[in-house]
Amino acid sequence: MAVLLMGKSGSGKTSMRSIIFANYIARDTRRLGATIDVEHSHVRFLGNLVLNLWDCGGQDTFMENYFTSQRDNIFRNVEVLIYVFDVESRELEKDMHYYQSCLEAILQNSPDAKIFCLVHKMDLVQEDQRDLIFKEREEDLRRLSRPLECACFRTSIWDETLYKAWSSIVYQLIPNVQQLEMNLRNFAQIIEADEVLLFERATFLVISHYQCKEQRDIHRFEKISNIIKQFKLSCSKLAASFQSMEVRNSNFAAFIDIFTSNTYVMVVMSDPSIPSAATLINIRNARKHFEKLERVDGPKHSLLMR
Image (cartoon, one colour):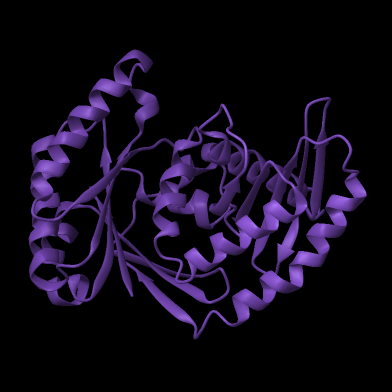
Protein backbone atom coordinates (compact mmCIF):
# COMPACT_ATOMS: atom_id res chain seq x y z
CA MET A 1 0.00 0.00 0.00
CA ALA A 2 1.54 3.31 -1.09
CA VAL A 3 1.16 6.80 0.39
CA LEU A 4 2.73 9.77 -1.33
CA LEU A 5 3.90 12.75 0.73
CA MET A 6 4.39 15.55 -1.75
CA GLY A 7 4.51 19.33 -2.03
CA LYS A 8 6.79 22.13 -3.16
CA SER A 9 10.20 22.57 -1.55
CA GLY A 10 9.91 24.48 1.72
CA SER A 11 6.24 23.66 2.26
CA GLY A 12 7.02 21.87 5.53
CA LYS A 13 6.74 18.16 4.63
CA THR A 14 9.93 17.06 6.35
CA SER A 15 9.25 19.16 9.46
CA MET A 16 5.82 17.62 10.02
CA ARG A 17 7.12 14.12 9.31
CA SER A 18 9.93 14.66 11.84
CA ILE A 19 7.51 15.88 14.53
CA ILE A 20 5.01 13.05 14.04
CA PHE A 21 7.34 10.13 13.41
CA ALA A 22 10.82 11.13 14.64
CA ASN A 23 10.03 12.84 17.99
CA TYR A 24 11.21 16.31 16.98
CA ILE A 25 9.81 19.33 18.74
CA ALA A 26 8.70 22.24 16.58
CA ARG A 27 11.64 24.54 17.28
CA ASP A 28 14.17 21.83 16.41
CA THR A 29 12.82 21.47 12.86
CA ARG A 30 14.52 24.76 11.97
CA ARG A 31 17.80 22.91 11.56
CA LEU A 32 16.38 20.48 8.99
CA GLY A 33 17.63 21.01 5.46
CA ALA A 34 15.76 20.64 2.19
CA THR A 35 14.98 17.08 1.10
CA ILE A 36 17.17 15.98 -1.80
CA ASP A 37 15.24 13.76 -4.22
CA VAL A 38 13.55 11.14 -1.96
CA GLU A 39 14.25 10.33 1.70
CA HIS A 40 13.35 6.83 2.87
CA SER A 41 12.57 5.80 6.42
CA HIS A 42 10.82 2.81 7.97
CA VAL A 43 8.37 3.19 10.85
CA ARG A 44 6.47 0.42 12.60
CA PHE A 45 3.00 1.75 13.36
CA LEU A 46 0.50 -0.18 15.46
CA GLY A 47 2.62 -3.31 15.20
CA ASN A 48 1.04 -4.76 12.06
CA LEU A 49 1.23 -1.58 10.02
CA VAL A 50 4.71 -0.82 8.68
CA LEU A 51 5.28 2.60 7.11
CA ASN A 52 7.93 2.82 4.43
CA LEU A 53 8.10 6.61 4.23
CA TRP A 54 9.03 8.32 1.00
CA ASP A 55 9.44 12.04 1.61
CA CYS A 56 9.64 13.46 -1.92
CA GLY A 57 11.80 16.54 -2.41
CA GLY A 58 9.83 19.42 -3.88
CA GLN A 59 12.43 21.26 -5.92
CA ASP A 60 11.32 21.93 -9.51
CA THR A 61 13.76 19.45 -11.05
CA PHE A 62 12.59 16.61 -8.82
CA MET A 63 8.92 17.43 -9.31
CA GLU A 64 9.28 17.36 -13.09
CA ASN A 65 11.03 13.99 -12.89
CA TYR A 66 8.19 12.55 -10.79
CA PHE A 67 5.72 13.38 -13.58
CA THR A 68 7.92 12.14 -16.44
CA SER A 69 10.70 9.56 -16.04
CA GLN A 70 9.56 8.35 -12.57
CA ARG A 71 5.81 8.58 -13.21
CA ASP A 72 4.98 4.87 -13.17
CA ASN A 73 7.28 4.14 -10.23
CA ILE A 74 5.88 6.95 -8.08
CA PHE A 75 2.18 6.86 -8.84
CA ARG A 76 1.36 3.19 -9.41
CA ASN A 77 -0.80 1.46 -6.73
CA VAL A 78 -1.09 4.56 -4.56
CA GLU A 79 -3.53 4.29 -1.66
CA VAL A 80 -3.19 7.84 -0.32
CA LEU A 81 -1.80 11.13 -1.61
CA ILE A 82 -0.90 13.73 1.03
CA TYR A 83 -0.12 17.05 -0.64
CA VAL A 84 1.28 19.91 1.46
CA PHE A 85 0.74 23.56 0.50
CA ASP A 86 2.57 26.51 2.05
CA VAL A 87 -0.24 28.98 2.75
CA GLU A 88 2.24 31.87 2.37
CA SER A 89 3.65 30.68 -0.97
CA ARG A 90 4.20 33.41 -3.55
CA GLU A 91 3.96 30.85 -6.36
CA LEU A 92 0.41 29.66 -5.84
CA GLU A 93 -0.17 29.14 -9.56
CA LYS A 94 2.86 26.84 -9.81
CA ASP A 95 1.78 25.01 -6.64
CA MET A 96 -1.62 24.32 -8.15
CA HIS A 97 -0.03 23.23 -11.44
CA TYR A 98 2.10 20.62 -9.65
CA TYR A 99 -0.90 19.47 -7.63
CA GLN A 100 -2.95 19.02 -10.80
CA SER A 101 -0.08 17.09 -12.37
CA CYS A 102 -0.14 14.77 -9.33
CA LEU A 103 -3.88 14.29 -9.70
CA GLU A 104 -3.56 13.47 -13.41
CA ALA A 105 -0.95 10.83 -12.61
CA ILE A 106 -3.12 9.48 -9.78
CA LEU A 107 -6.18 9.26 -12.05
CA GLN A 108 -4.16 7.38 -14.64
CA ASN A 109 -2.43 4.97 -12.27
CA SER A 110 -4.44 4.85 -8.99
CA PRO A 111 -7.96 6.26 -9.49
CA ASP A 112 -9.21 4.89 -6.12
CA ALA A 113 -6.61 6.72 -4.04
CA LYS A 114 -7.64 8.90 -1.10
CA ILE A 115 -6.51 12.52 -1.39
CA PHE A 116 -5.55 14.74 1.57
CA CYS A 117 -4.47 18.38 1.23
CA LEU A 118 -2.71 20.11 4.13
CA VAL A 119 -2.78 23.91 4.00
CA HIS A 120 0.31 24.37 6.13
CA LYS A 121 2.00 27.15 8.13
CA MET A 122 -1.35 28.64 9.12
CA ASP A 123 0.33 30.24 12.13
CA LEU A 124 1.80 32.81 9.71
CA VAL A 125 -1.68 34.06 8.81
CA GLN A 126 -3.35 36.70 10.96
CA GLU A 127 -5.72 34.93 13.32
CA ASP A 128 -8.82 36.83 12.18
CA GLN A 129 -8.09 35.88 8.55
CA ARG A 130 -7.42 32.15 9.00
CA ASP A 131 -10.97 30.86 8.58
CA LEU A 132 -11.57 32.89 5.43
CA ILE A 133 -8.26 32.02 3.77
CA PHE A 134 -8.56 28.33 4.57
CA LYS A 135 -12.13 28.21 3.27
CA GLU A 136 -11.06 29.83 -0.01
CA ARG A 137 -8.16 27.40 -0.44
CA GLU A 138 -10.36 24.44 0.44
CA GLU A 139 -12.94 25.42 -2.18
CA ASP A 140 -10.23 25.87 -4.83
CA LEU A 141 -8.62 22.52 -4.04
CA ARG A 142 -11.88 20.60 -4.05
CA ARG A 143 -12.77 22.12 -7.41
CA LEU A 144 -9.34 21.30 -8.88
CA SER A 145 -9.47 17.74 -7.53
CA ARG A 146 -12.63 16.69 -9.39
CA PRO A 147 -13.55 13.98 -10.24
CA LEU A 148 -11.47 12.89 -7.23
CA GLU A 149 -12.48 14.02 -3.75
CA CYS A 150 -10.04 15.58 -1.31
CA ALA A 151 -10.14 16.21 2.43
CA CYS A 152 -8.46 19.45 3.48
CA PHE A 153 -6.86 20.35 6.80
CA ARG A 154 -5.30 23.53 8.10
CA THR A 155 -2.03 22.75 9.87
CA SER A 156 0.84 24.29 11.79
CA ILE A 157 3.75 22.67 13.61
CA TRP A 158 3.17 25.12 16.46
CA ASP A 159 -0.25 23.91 17.62
CA GLU A 160 -2.54 20.88 17.78
CA THR A 161 -3.76 21.13 14.16
CA LEU A 162 -0.87 18.99 12.91
CA TYR A 163 -1.93 16.10 15.17
CA LYS A 164 -5.57 16.50 14.15
CA ALA A 165 -4.72 16.17 10.45
CA TRP A 166 -2.40 13.19 10.82
CA SER A 167 -4.73 11.39 13.25
CA SER A 168 -7.52 11.72 10.68
CA ILE A 169 -5.28 10.38 7.91
CA VAL A 170 -3.89 7.47 9.91
CA TYR A 171 -7.38 6.56 11.13
CA GLN A 172 -8.26 5.64 7.54
CA LEU A 173 -5.25 3.34 7.25
CA ILE A 174 -6.01 1.13 10.27
CA PRO A 175 -7.38 -2.17 8.93
CA ASN A 176 -9.59 -3.16 11.92
CA VAL A 177 -10.67 0.26 13.15
CA GLN A 178 -14.41 -0.58 13.40
CA GLN A 179 -13.73 -3.62 15.57
CA LEU A 180 -11.36 -1.56 17.69
CA GLU A 181 -13.98 1.14 18.23
CA MET A 182 -16.67 -1.39 19.14
CA ASN A 183 -14.48 -2.95 21.81
CA LEU A 184 -13.42 0.46 23.11
CA ARG A 185 -17.09 1.42 23.46
CA ASN A 186 -17.81 -1.77 25.40
CA PHE A 187 -14.84 -1.12 27.66
CA ALA A 188 -15.95 2.48 28.36
CA GLN A 189 -19.49 1.41 29.18
CA ILE A 190 -18.41 -1.43 31.47
CA ILE A 191 -16.13 0.80 33.58
CA GLU A 192 -18.60 3.74 33.46
CA ALA A 193 -16.08 6.13 31.93
CA ASP A 194 -16.99 9.52 30.52
CA GLU A 195 -14.52 9.04 27.71
CA VAL A 196 -11.81 6.63 26.57
CA LEU A 197 -9.06 7.49 24.07
CA LEU A 198 -6.59 5.15 22.39
CA PHE A 199 -3.22 6.56 21.30
CA GLU A 200 -0.64 4.97 19.04
CA ARG A 201 2.36 4.42 21.30
CA ALA A 202 5.19 5.85 19.18
CA THR A 203 3.47 8.90 17.66
CA PHE A 204 0.75 9.49 20.28
CA LEU A 205 -1.76 10.08 17.51
CA VAL A 206 -5.35 9.40 18.54
CA ILE A 207 -6.48 6.29 16.65
CA SER A 208 -9.82 5.60 18.36
CA HIS A 209 -12.08 7.03 21.03
CA TYR A 210 -15.48 6.68 22.64
CA GLN A 211 -17.33 9.29 24.69
CA CYS A 212 -20.39 8.84 26.87
CA LYS A 213 -20.75 12.52 27.71
CA GLU A 214 -20.50 15.61 25.54
CA GLN A 215 -17.24 17.56 25.97
CA ARG A 216 -16.80 21.27 25.32
CA ASP A 217 -13.34 21.34 23.72
CA ILE A 218 -13.47 19.78 20.24
CA HIS A 219 -9.67 20.04 19.95
CA ARG A 220 -8.93 18.20 23.20
CA PHE A 221 -7.58 15.02 21.53
CA GLU A 222 -4.90 16.84 19.58
CA LYS A 223 -3.99 19.04 22.54
CA ILE A 224 -3.51 15.95 24.72
CA SER A 225 -1.39 14.29 22.02
CA ASN A 226 0.81 17.35 21.79
CA ILE A 227 1.18 17.80 25.57
CA ILE A 228 1.97 14.15 26.32
CA LYS A 229 4.36 13.87 23.38
CA GLN A 230 6.30 16.88 24.71
CA PHE A 231 6.26 15.43 28.24
CA LYS A 232 7.58 12.09 26.94
CA LEU A 233 10.42 13.91 25.17
CA SER A 234 11.26 15.79 28.37
CA CYS A 235 11.37 12.48 30.25
CA SER A 236 13.68 10.93 27.66
CA LYS A 237 16.14 13.82 28.01
CA LEU A 238 16.42 12.92 31.71
CA ALA A 239 16.95 9.25 30.82
CA ALA A 240 13.51 8.47 32.26
CA SER A 241 10.67 6.63 30.56
CA PHE A 242 7.07 7.76 30.64
CA GLN A 243 4.67 5.00 31.67
CA SER A 244 1.56 6.45 33.28
CA MET A 245 -0.05 9.59 34.67
CA GLU A 246 -3.07 10.50 36.79
CA VAL A 247 -4.58 14.00 36.77
CA ARG A 248 -7.36 14.72 39.24
CA ASN A 249 -9.43 17.67 40.42
CA SER A 250 -12.85 18.14 42.00
CA ASN A 251 -14.67 17.48 38.70
CA PHE A 252 -12.88 14.55 37.09
CA ALA A 253 -9.95 12.16 37.09
CA ALA A 254 -7.93 11.29 33.97
CA PHE A 255 -5.68 8.24 33.74
CA ILE A 256 -3.08 7.78 30.99
CA ASP A 257 -1.35 4.40 30.97
CA ILE A 258 0.42 1.92 28.73
CA PHE A 259 -2.28 -0.31 27.28
CA THR A 260 -1.00 -2.75 24.67
CA SER A 261 2.48 -3.11 23.21
CA ASN A 262 1.47 -0.56 20.57
CA THR A 263 -0.91 1.78 22.39
CA TYR A 264 -1.56 4.04 25.36
CA VAL A 265 -5.04 4.52 26.80
CA MET A 266 -6.61 7.54 28.46
CA VAL A 267 -9.67 7.04 30.68
CA VAL A 268 -11.68 10.02 31.94
CA MET A 269 -13.95 9.48 34.97
CA SER A 270 -16.25 11.98 36.70
CA ASP A 271 -17.94 9.65 39.21
CA PRO A 272 -16.24 10.41 42.58
CA SER A 273 -17.52 7.13 44.06
CA ILE A 274 -15.21 5.08 41.77
CA PRO A 275 -11.73 4.93 43.36
CA SER A 276 -8.56 5.30 41.30
CA ALA A 277 -7.45 1.77 42.16
CA ALA A 278 -10.59 0.31 40.59
CA THR A 279 -10.03 2.18 37.31
CA LEU A 280 -6.37 1.14 37.17
CA ILE A 281 -7.35 -2.50 37.76
CA ASN A 282 -9.92 -2.27 34.96
CA ILE A 283 -7.29 -0.89 32.59
CA ARG A 284 -4.90 -3.69 33.53
CA ASN A 285 -7.57 -6.37 33.07
CA ALA A 286 -8.54 -5.03 29.63
CA ARG A 287 -4.96 -5.17 28.30
CA LYS A 288 -5.02 -8.86 27.43
CA HIS A 289 -8.25 -8.51 25.47
CA PHE A 290 -6.94 -5.61 23.36
CA GLU A 291 -3.57 -7.32 22.89
CA LYS A 292 -5.47 -10.29 21.49
CA LEU A 293 -7.34 -7.98 19.09
CA GLU A 294 -4.02 -6.76 17.72
CA ARG A 295 -2.64 -10.31 17.34
CA VAL A 296 -5.65 -11.62 15.43
CA ASP A 297 -5.72 -8.53 13.28
CA GLY A 298 -4.32 -10.51 10.39
CA PRO A 299 -1.05 -10.47 8.48
CA LYS A 300 1.39 -7.62 8.62
CA HIS A 301 0.39 -4.65 6.48
CA SER A 302 3.12 -2.78 4.66
CA LEU A 303 2.35 0.86 3.99
CA LEU A 304 4.61 2.50 1.43
CA MET A 305 4.70 6.23 2.10
CA ARG A 306 6.46 8.00 -0.74
